[in-house]
Amino acid sequence: MLQTDYSSRYSLSHLMEVFPSPGKRYTLSPTPSKWRQRDILIQNWFDHLNDQAPWDLYIHIPFCKSICTFCGCNVKITEGHDQEGIYIDKIIQEWSFYKKEFPQAKVNNLFIGGGTPNALSDKNLARLLENFEFEGLSIELAPQLFTESQAKILSQFKVRRVSFGVQDLDQHVLQNVNRQQKTEDVYNALFLARKYGLGDISIDLIYGMPLQTSHTIEKTFTKILSQYPDLVYYYPLAHVPWQASRQKAYGHFESTAQKQKNILYEKGVNKLNQEGYKNLGFNAFVLKDSSLDYSHSLKRNICSIGSDLSSTLIGLGVSSITSNNKMYLQNHKIIEKYLHSDQKERKLFPIGYIKSEYDISLESIFQKVFEDKVIKDQNYNFTNMTRYGLLEKNKGFYKVTEAGLHFLPHILDQLEKQLHSNNRYS
Image 1 (tube, rainbow, N blue to C red):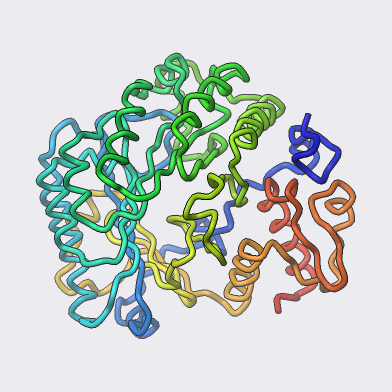
Image 2 (cartoon, rainbow, N blue to C red):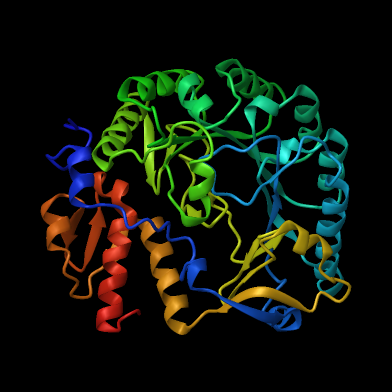
């Protein structure tokens, strides 16, 4: 039971039964499922692109050594490094179109995700990074593949954060989802990251996987938090249509009952509370007195949480998403199409969405709620969430409580429904 940690008198697992998550992460509005297959000319995008402020870049590296059956990311399984060269060539070519059109453009954050970015050979990892100038690098890494030579390469660049996809430390849980990773791999990866000064350390964990129990979750958190990572993401296992066959292809896979998932989440949160981690909302927990804890006006996008995120995100590589306050664009989702598409002129994006006034306003409201944890009252009906202690009603506004931080997706879902039904979005 949660007692003094929250303003609410209800347990967290009970609140999760009352206020189930809508499944949306509220980083894109509308979600990609609402986007259409439409060709958008790159010149149209360039006309809406401003290089007066720095951009952020995201590069997708799809390569993985093996498939983890829980994963819903765009991946390409390969044992060798044969395709890496041509793929990096294509990314560099894609970036060259931007540099030609906007030679003065500056890059603030470079995000590299996957897939498994450190599945690249040392040579290809170095070549990729050497072709970009940026103020700070954040990169996803698989701890079981992280080597000292990779740490040395990364140390030559301005690394702000390394994110290790740990997911769990119990060997039965990991083997069941075909993940080859040992606890010693994680400890060694964290040691190397600190030895070479690779910025803040972030750990990703998942709850709701088959064979997880309260006991295994507690042991995983005890081991992870003994290493004091700066940031911990604690995500629910995602069930999405395109990974259904993958999840059933290996090992035992039955959906964990929602009540059990709620208990697993509460168990992990209690461990985070005990070790002094602060809930930022949206499954992110920051270590007290870390650099993120001292950051003001934290923002979030599809790549990260930070105080210095740019409003323009350029996505490079297969399936990557590009966005600003006017448009969403997405590259080909199939690597072969991405690699072999005619990009000599780079005339179009295969998937795109032009934001309406409503979309833009809604996105701004969501971002503001995350930053300030406050909702300006416009005669909203939040009676139930107020009664259960997720929101506090004040004169002219609602404040998100400590308990409410766990339910930001639900709060935003209710806010969106009321805005839509009343046609109010200012």
